[in-house]
Length: 117
Image (cartoon, rainbow, N blue to C red; front, side, top):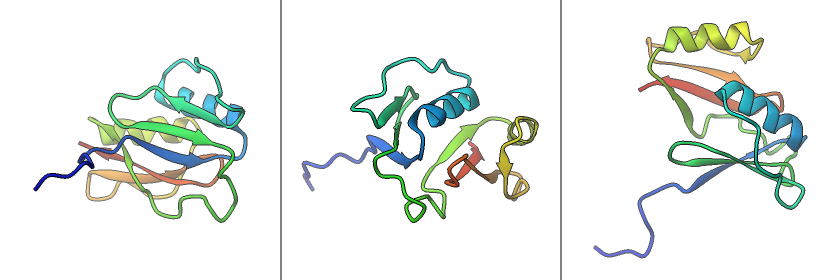
């Protein structure tokens, strides 16, 4: 069947309260430089391999934060990633589950996941 819609995800928007603070936090977490401009005063595109992440302070409200992870960050070593997050003082909300994943919150309360893939 032909469709004009691709079976790809282009980007995921994350609601954040303070765009500069969020940019710095995510870039530090991912070990990348916080380079690039904040677009239109409320958007920051995190340089990723594959699907992009856009931090957006315009869509932020306490009601809009992710209550369930809508994606996961990949890792090859889940235990190392878990220890890394704990050592950084990140709000890790679960232990490693089934040897494959754990959940954490960003500074704005978005529930996110890291998964061994």
